[in-house]
Length: 254
Ligand code: PEP
Image (tube, rainbow, N blue to C red; front, side):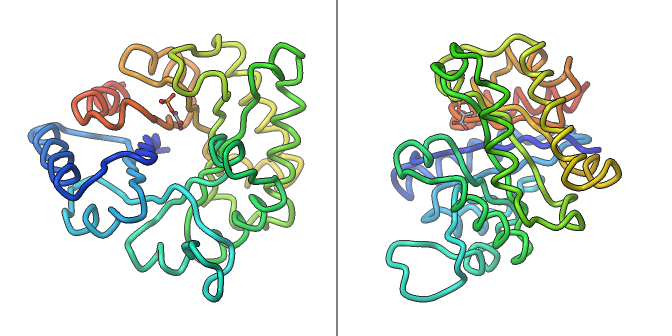
């Protein structure tokens, strides 16, 4: 199975000039690099999707950072799955902790988005994970369980191969703190068990389970490769093409 490397550029790259600089630098970093067994997905802000698509950078697949569940209509400020498809997206991040926190996204809404993404042939990258407080209260596994089960309600097992689940502990996002190997492993095993319950083993095995939170060239071995995770979700380090490609090379050369 190819490993997934997802770059979440968040609300960065503030101008078209900055975008061109970023894309040029990415292209330069990729020159002469053999990248095997990886799918590289970059998720820029909506306004840059067209610019990223036009750049046609080899090996780069496009993703979005969010979407609405309806396909069209009077939903001011929202972006539809149909639009994302038309702008060249293959993936969409859903349920990121920043959306849950700042935009009060609830599990039921994330579930509607997952169903809609799959129906519209987008591959959802569902983010789940506990806060610092929940971790201290020994709630990690129950939080993950609740988030995964709610998000996947009424999702057909025939769609499993298009699903990605990112275990992203909130306390690790942007902090340079990463979980211990056994903590990631426990989360992975739990998610897999839930998937077996929902879809059966054959289909559960098709879902990719990746890790996100302070992934860098220094941590990628510990949080992904040593544990046999299916890939990584990268925030800050994806903003610097040099660092992002370093992570990709480490995974690709494994
Ligand atoms: C993220 O927010 O999705 C993320 C993984 O961020 P960082 O890599 O900066 O911790």
